[in-house]
Amino acid sequence: MTKLLFSMLCFVLCSSLGMRNKSTHLLTGTKQIFVNSTKDFSLEDTVLFPGIFLNKESDELTEGFQLFTFDFDKNTVEHNFWKYYGDSIVDTTVNLIIKPISVNENFAIFIFEDKSMYYNTLKEKYFILNLKNNPNYPKLQILWKEPGGLKGAYAVDTRDFNGLFTDSKEDIFEL
Image (cartoon, rainbow, N blue to C red; front, side):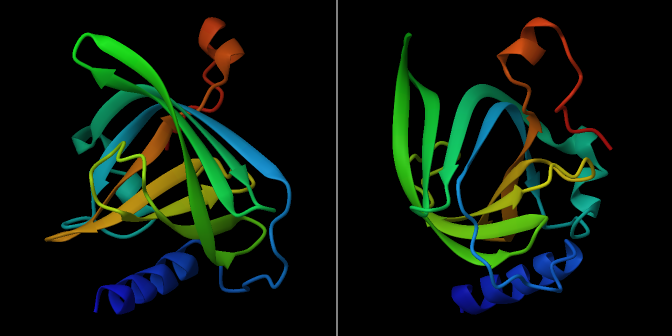
């Protein structure tokens, strides 16, 4: 039942994101996304995309440095992040295997087993990757199913180190 629900959800998401003309070519190469902060969201009482990004004042901001390195040729993502153990911070790297669900020239949706447990202990999650950096959508979204609805996080601040030091507003997701 869960797989059927997610299949239906992915169809709706793909349609909403303009993925009606699904590409037959596979992604190649790599894409790296540095995430300085994310906002958590819930679809329990929210309109689907892009409506989830319109009510951002009720979303919970989470700051923390994460680096996602997508290798489309190997169907993997290297997830680097800081993990807190009491008073200590440990740099952590987890390799994730991704499986493409839907891809076009603008967006890609992948399913993966989350070994990082960065957001929660649920294993089955989804990436929605903004391939062309469309400013109306975040560069990266992570979704999962919980009792009561679909939840997730989206990247708000994806500035590189230069953007952080020069206070550049580029790559900050705003509607």
